[in-house]
Image (cartoon, rainbow, N blue to C red; front, side, top):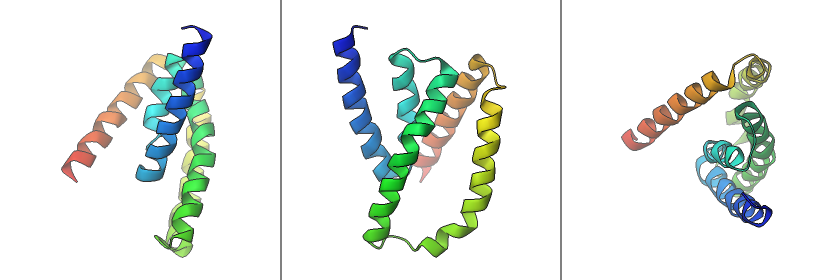
Length: 120
């Protein structure tokens, strides 16, 4: 892929990932990983980079939701410590999982998430 197409894909993809993240709550990561692979990153690098992209986007979405009164921060506290522990475990496991397996696990998760979204 030439540099101009890669830049356009990155800009357009980043905007779409941000919109999905704001609408779905970190759902943009499901799009970010394939986009990052398309621009040349390996599977493991794409997952790690997607997390680095989603973190600030999630913080911005959180601030917007909080300011608009869609949730109370107190409601999230019960999820923060277990979520942080899970994120740390996932980050440590990422380096140990072969890219081919990571690809399959990610695909299964995307199918599961899609079915849950359709079933409501």
